[in-house]
Amino acid sequence: MNKQQYDNLQGSISLISSFNLKNKKDRTLIWGYDLERNSFHFYLKNGLFHLIVYTNNDKIIRKKINLESIHYTDCLPSKRAYPEACDFEFCSLLKSFGADISFTVFDEKRESEIFYGEVMEDFEKEG
Image (cartoon, one colour):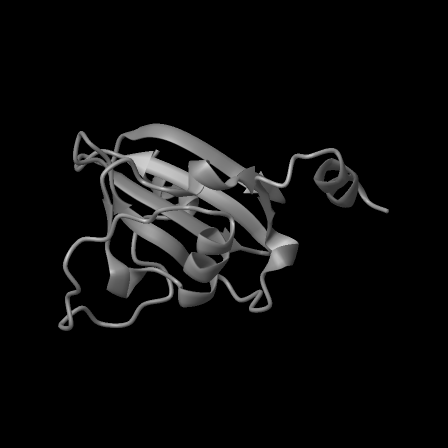
């Protein structure tokens, strides 16, 4: 038994692990915005979860990086998610945990991307 399995047995089944995903490719999992209209980017890179919340001036407000697991509520923006920029497998997993994902209107014109929002390396280049 590993630590994640142990935590699940102890009642901490609200944690989502990157191991829960079948598709391990780097990509945006949830992209949206919070109540203050800051960008909310939750993504998978190198098999680990990353969360970056940043302003329209590219100032990081909150970050959680290189995580194997995270509480499912930390994966959700406080306002809305862009459905065409979210990963179906991950959203299905969130739903299985009881998450209520608040989506905005679907934008059929958005082009497909690997990462829709900024990633940590984008901020490191600037700073």
